Length: 110
Image (tube, rainbow, N blue to C red):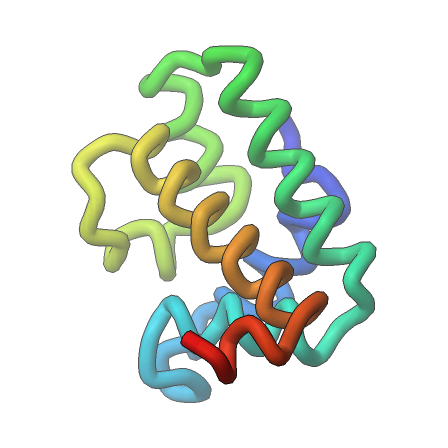
C-alpha cells in the first residue's frame, strides 16, 4: 500500500514533522488542509481513505503504512489504538470540513 496523492498532500504537506508547532490540534490541521487548498485535494484524500477502508486492509499493514510509509512523527502522537479507527477519524474530520467549506452557512447556523 502506498500513499496516494490526496493523502500524501495531507500527511506530508500538513502533518509534517513540525505540524504541532504550526497548529494547535489535528482538527486545525485538517481544517487548514481543506480550507487552504483546492477542494479536489480534500475530496481525493477522502476517497482514498474510503478505498482503504473498503479494502479492509489488516491492522498490521495499516500500522506499517502509518509508521513507515507516511512517517512516524505524527503517527506516534495519534490517540487511537487501532489504525482503522484513526482512518475513520480522519474520514469524519475531512467530510465535516468539506461540508463546511461547501456550505459555510450551515456552520454559522449550528
